[in-house]
Image (cartoon, rainbow, N blue to C red; front, side, top):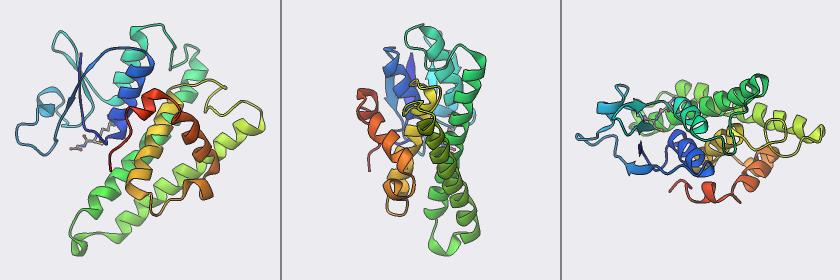
Length: 209
Ligand SMILES: N[C@@H](CCC(=O)N[C@@H](CS)C(=O)NCC(=O)O)C(=O)O
């Protein structure tokens, strides 16, 4: 199996971490999306990473499909709970974390335009999604701490929810570290990030400034 990825994609990082946590070997192929010969479009008509190319040549996308596929490949350390109500909770945390990434990516792309071409109301609307998402995730973690359910996002166990939130935090820190102060404004998320950064899978996949 081969994963097409870019080094700072939070969605691809989620997949890399799931594979590492599950001890599944995949070949990593870093791509440059803007390159004319970038292979991603051959495997995903949307032209987005991550894409997992299976040994029979078939391809899987997007990250949510790939992580479920990897999680089901081995019963070792399920990251998506088998119980359906716990699984839905994990998926909701993932949806919100991925949604914050979507908004952060949109802002980053807008800010790469020449200043005269940038739409301030677009940036404000998407930064609103980022800050509301961070606030809700931080508040939901507080509920876990109050009820003694440990530091992890869902039911006191490490899961895909923690991985998705951790990848989102890494991306927000990379792009907006100068304006988003996690420790001050979202202390529960900062504590989760500290716990996650003790795991080798997170250390090995850190975004590169
Ligand atoms: N929902 C998708 C999002 C993937 C995505 O947006 N990837 C970005 C990189 S961070 C990308 O490939 N962008 C290229 C493009 O949109 O053309 C997933 O979870 O895989």
